[in-house]
Image (tube, rainbow, N blue to C red; front, side, top):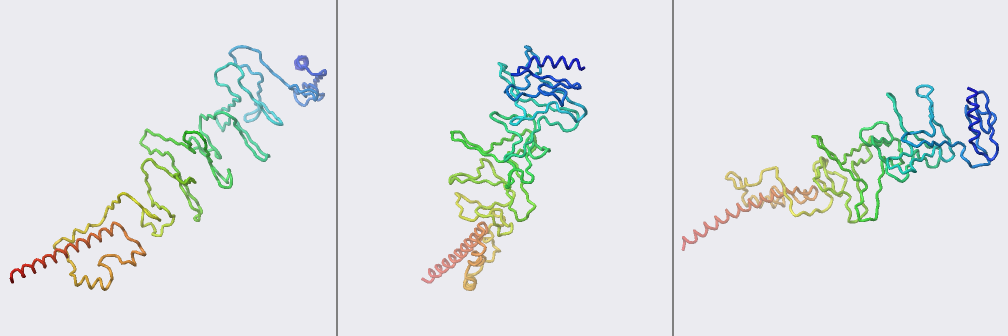
Length: 359
């Protein structure tokens, strides 16, 4: 073994070209170049008067084979051993692929982890101690992920899962931030999501849920905002379904859930259709309908200062009016007025007939 190491050392000493005669030392099955007491089985100490690379390995084979310039193997026991360990002041490892006329896929770094049990990580990177720490930085070029992506968690319930725990991304606890801007003629999307399905299950382009254990916090499933005067904070080109109430111009519900739509402001529409749930007042024309006589009506008006069955001004001021119910009341009064007119016309006709008979 010592003879083999000695021969190898002599060959290496001939290949190394330094400005001074290199020193090769063999001690207890250890080889050292430019140092007298090597602490490893093979150790090279670079010279301080040259910028030459300390170690250079090159293959000259020409053919369709994956010849390795350097190969490291270390597996002393299951779960132990480094194939390579590097320390650099600027870069621990600088890998470069390509530089030939090969038209296939070229990898700057190809990492692979395999096994039949346990967790396998192809690449693991950490960064700490700096003003800003990035465990990974990807320069120009697209990023292609063949499998799932998990951020802040090892679990994954979809192709991409992001967990923001303990304000991992800042004091605002933003799990993901997307910004898009351009000055071209094309559209700019902060996010563009397309969801398709061919099965019987529901398909959601966006599905949001929000909750809080603090009862004083306001929870928004979706919050949209635009600072542009003519912009739209939300635009829907399809149908919109709201299972709970809708509030416009206010977040307050002073009616304790009685109404599905609460609007603070004016509303304009080309047509409004009210689907009344109670009977329309055609019952006024029924033979058994008891029509109040005019004297009783006059007494009622003098006493209450509004028509019977019509809400007072005080009630309207405090509670407003229900359009559908008010239309029904108005129609009832119109039909009653029609009945009074018919009765009066009959009395007029009777008086005319009496006058004609007395002539």
